[in-house]
Image (cartoon, rainbow, N blue to C red; front, side, top):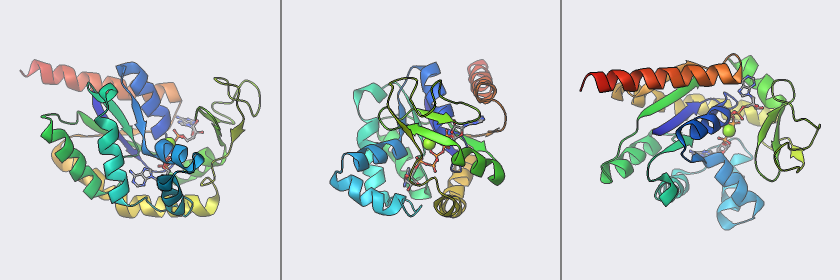
Length: 223
Ligand code: AP5
Ligand code: MG
C-alpha cells in the first residue's frame, strides 16, 4: 500500500500514519520527524530546516523532494509506505508522481484528515512528544502512564518548539495557501479520500481502514 496523509497541523496525520503503517506492515515516513532528527543531530540540513520550521514556514522544495526521493528508494519502502506530511506543495505532489511512475508504481490513496481550527489548537497545546523515540502523547486523550515519561522508552516528554500559538497560526496559514492546492490535485486524479479527524483515535483509524478496504474490494470486483 502506498499512501499519503494530508491535513492541517495537529489534524492527526502522525497518529493515523503510524496506525496505518502498522496495519499494512510498511514504514511510516514523516518528513517532519526526519527534519526534527536532523535538527537534533545538528546536521547542515537540520540547521537549514530549523530556520524555516521555527517560523512555521515550509522547508524549501529542493531539500524536501530529494530527501523523500532517497527515503522511498530505500529497500524497506519497496512494497509500500505511509507518507506523513508530504507532499505539501503541488510541486512536491507532481514530483512524487514522477518518481513513482519511473518505477512503474503509483499511489493507492491520498487521505485528507479534516479537523476544525479550535480542536487543532486544543490538540497541539496538549501534545507531548518523546525526546528520544518521537512517540506522541496527548495530556487528555492519550496521556503517558507516568507524567512526563515516555511509555515506550522511558525518556523525557517535551512540547515541540513549533507548538506555540504564534507558530501554529503561521503553520495553518501556510497549510491553506500552499497545501490545499494539493488536495485539489489528488481530487482531480480521483485518489483523494476525505475523512473526519474528530472522535476517538481508534474510531478514526477504523473508518479509514474500512474506506480503503471497501474501495480495494470494489476495484478487484471490477476486474
Ligand atoms: P510536521 O511534523 O508534519 O507538522 P504538522 O504538519 O504541523 O503536523 P503535526 O505533526 O503538528 O500534527 P499531526 O497532524 O501529525 O498530528 P498528531 O498526530 O501529532 O511538520 C513540521 C514542520 O516541518 C512543518 O511546519 C514544515 O516546516 C516542515 N515540513 C514537514 N514536511 C514538509 C514538507 N513536505 N515540505 C516542506 N516542509 C515540511 O496529533 C496531534 C495531537 O492530537 C497529539 O497529541 C495526538 O496524540 C492527538 N490526537 C491525534 N488524534 C486524536 C484524536 N482522534 N482524538 C484526540 N486526540 C488526538
Ligand atoms: Mg505529525
